[in-house]
Length: 144
Image 1 (cartoon, rainbow, N blue to C red):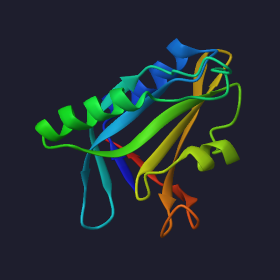
Image 2: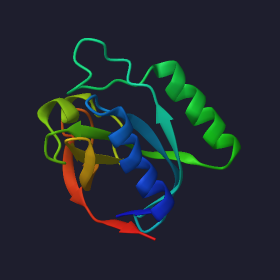
Image 3: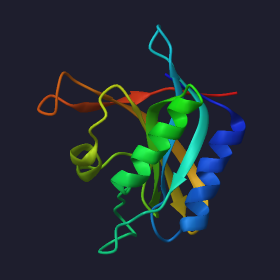
């Protein structure tokens, strides 16, 4: 399960609207609970570095990701997940999303943005033993 504040949840959805018609992307920071709950305590917006098709693909610059991870650790936060938007497409993962997901045990949040307005937001846990076994599981989102 993913637990997130309403402030961070709305920030993710607003980011999708602002980036429309391109995909937005960012990082979820917080803690992993012993009971498997990922608790989001902050989010970090990232630039979508895809220039070939930013309307249906995203990429986070590895240097930006390392900086976010370092700054999060200084505040006692871990990377617990990632988020991106699907402009004019459902809030479901695609085969490309699965192929490009590598942080097993993390949450992947997707917001569909329809005609510039955030619609549905869903989350998926990347599960599996390794890259060859990875798969997404639907994940409950608790907004507080």
